[in-house]
Image 1 (cartoon, rainbow, N blue to C red):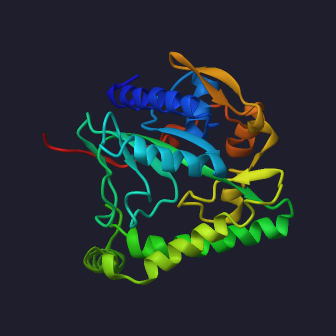
Image 2 (image 1 turned 30 degrees about the vertical axis):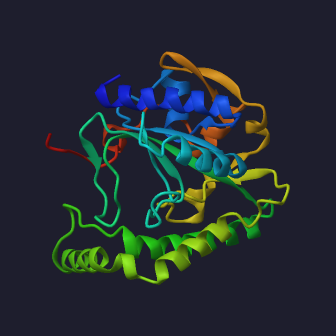
Length: 277
């Protein structure tokens, strides 16, 4: 493990102990689940940790963790519980030991330090048409929130696109706290995400992720609930952690031929900057 991965791992071990203590059912998710199966630990180029849990577990985790870390020790909790302008619909547990920061819009605060992402997995309808409709509802609100909160220029932006992004960034940074549409959109997004929470569906999906551009991409996140009702454990670095009972089915849906390493140019990481001490 490199220095950042080691700090991510320390947070993960602490979060695992918290979940076990509070009887909250979590599981390794996305690239972290892939790393556990393919590498028995971190994907070598990965820089964070992803775990997930069903919505009812997440809502309890969210409330309890906000209290557990209200004094920001030993870690810091980043959530809509303590930041109403946070664009993400998931949460993060952070350590401030390493002087790094995710590169995000200036409307988004508290993005310093190593982190573990915690994703709520919401129930989705079994009917494909209704499932697609739910995603499109959520994605509509997410796209608008990205415009109001997450626009930022990149090194690839040129000409009119760069000017437009700079203008939008400037306006967002000045006006986001008085933009009356932001809290309305967040409420509508949450309602769309959780509309099936009391329905006994067979699957859950990651409706909180911000960057699914279409339904096909989102569909790779769908997990059968039976795979997480009785999770198993596997080794991730030095300790055992919970994973779905059929990790192969989950990973095949998400990544296809997941045991084959991607081309070097596809080994993507987050945009991270080093902060001055």
